[in-house]
Image 1: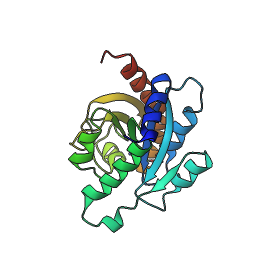
Image 2: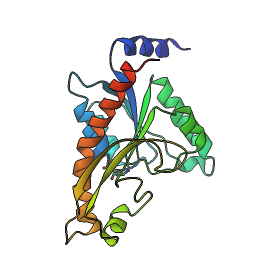
Image 3: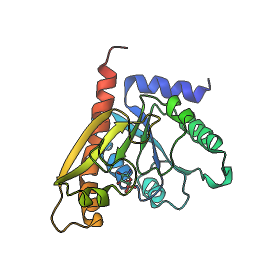
Image 4: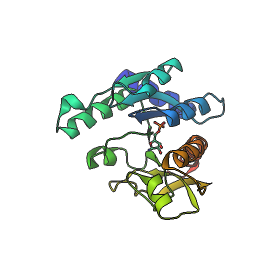
Length: 210
Ligand code: GRF
């Protein structure tokens, strides 16, 4: 174990859980969590933001907030998904990360990384799971005549959008909704739900018997 890792663990015992956030794009959920973590009583600190997409606007947002932000581009790895994930995993561990938040991370993870972070990796999905896993959730919810839509924070397991649900928020579907209009309404709910659910998850883990 390196001295750095040791220091992180010692610091963690007294204080906040070190969280790494994985993004691919805008990073609005990431920004909401970074903002929430400014509060003195928030139980997490954001140790690092990592994007597989070097052009992700979220990287600049994170840096502007004083958070270390890395691009680990998947493209040079080609089909070697596992090696790309190994690079991400190493970057997280070097920074003493204890829990991982997927916030618009648009790569499907292999079982290798999922198992490595089992029970400590969260995702947000813009539907009321188990309804509408996968892509195009808003268009599908509208086409099905749903009166309600929403978002779900869940633990990541090997099945896509399948892990245990940690929290959900609901919004109405309006008669004239386009997928974009519904997505914008859901997004506002996401920005409240994700920081709150992450905090509740960490507090519950800290008080749970080992
Ligand atoms: C969100 O709608 C989230 O539910 C989905 O990807 C989107 C990410 O948006 N997983 P942002 O990058 O957080 O703005």
